[in-house]
Length: 95
Image 1: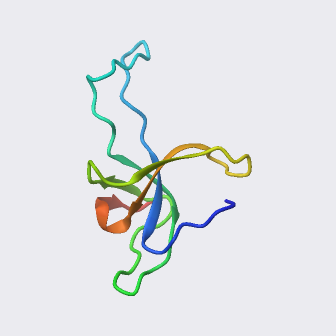
Image 2: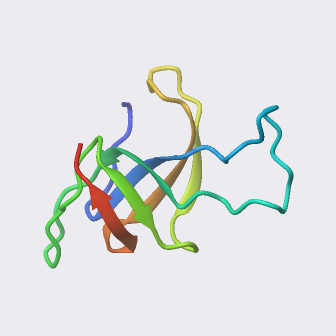
Image 3: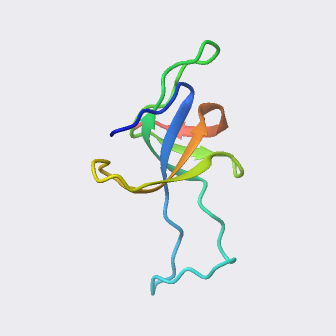
């Protein structure tokens, strides 16, 4: 990856919306997923040790994080991601 995630932050590939059998998502009828897979982590901060690792599955606060779109060709998983503070993670499961 060309960039680096700052200390205390994590980058998450958000889970996909649930779709109907035909692959249709009806706007306004489904909530945006609040879970995903960690693809990059920053280091520890003076107050907080980084607990999550790349590959962990996380569940995070509904209104937390910033949506970022990475389109760089050298980034293996380009697309839409969520960048958030580790303290916004409610639950995680190690790989």
